Image (cartoon, each protein chain N blue to C red):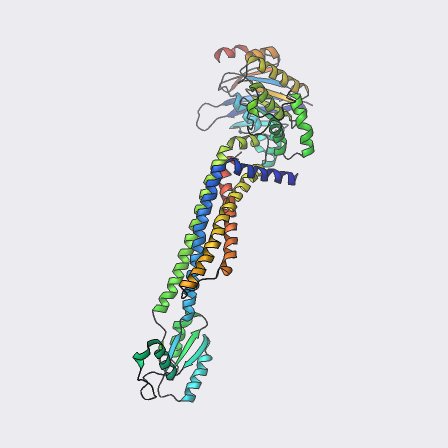
Length: 238
Length: 294
């Protein structure tokens, strides 16, 4: 039962980049269950982004093991790697929207790229846009939207393919507090429908407010892991 | 799903060609210029070979007959010549015919040599070989036949001509390969720029789980389009220019035998279009390699 519950497991994972003596992630063990909502906090350079890249398998660990649904990520073949990534919705600080495509096209793109049928695309894209509250903005281009709205497009693109997990790296980093708060509530709604959510963030006030699991990192190490935690003292150093 | 994907690839490729207007224009221009030079060179090469072949065909052996030979002996000699393996054609030129020819060429200079007693010329055979390259060897064999006084075939000149056409062919092939590689390199660089400009889009495709070929196809088609359109221009131009050139030469330099346009132009057009397309495709694949590392 416990095995089925576990989505991601990191066992003594380290990651060093070749040109750097100090590892970005050092001897980190962590377990995330299905349906969990996890904040990844810590100062810049703590290793949060690297951790997200490791889970997405954009990077492979220098040592240790990461399993996703019990499968060793370092051993994925090309096809399995694609399937793995298709089950992850990524959200970025800089939104990463295609500026020459409309809101609708940007979201549909995520399904087109993985070869979903047109009928499914016509059904799912409006649903995803409705979920993030962008109904009516389908034909707008990213440049015509506010930062908060652009990030909503990014989130719609992440969830339109019904991912097992949403990974967000500083999703509110470019937004004001009000917009950030609304986005966090959106992530909570997504989580409530069963999708696992991991958010790397600096927004300590939001973390404190949400009362979710908090994993704190510093210098690549895990220094605190609390259910219903708070940002803690780390924000003093940021 | 397949057809839809292809529509997507083709639409992406065309819109990219359009979006990168100046870059596309430059690529097409580069391909056009390169293939124009290449095409001109191919035509030049074909014609040099053609002329060389023509000259080769005209090379023949002249075998002079001993004066003492009787008419029936000459006939026997003729039969044994025709029976030789490498011989294509044997023509008998009597001393009277030979004198007539000289008169035609030099006119009054050769007056006064008429008549059996005063004619200084000999009967001869003009022999053509099946394969022009065999002429030196054949000449030797002919010289050894009884009744042949002397054999002439432009010794030295013939050997040189043959070795020159060989060298010209080699240089031509090397030159053509060089030009094709240059065109490929230029297209690769151009597409690299368009890929660079779309690095973000490629990264996003990667993040949403696109296969490598989903990313690759639009760029591949774009390269193929650039190559094809680049080839179209020089193809049409060469067709027109070459037809004109052949028409002009046949009027003004009629001794220069050129390959008639009908015989080469379709093949050349096919070759250039295929080459442009392939060069464009390979160029774009080469320039994308770096971006597809996942």
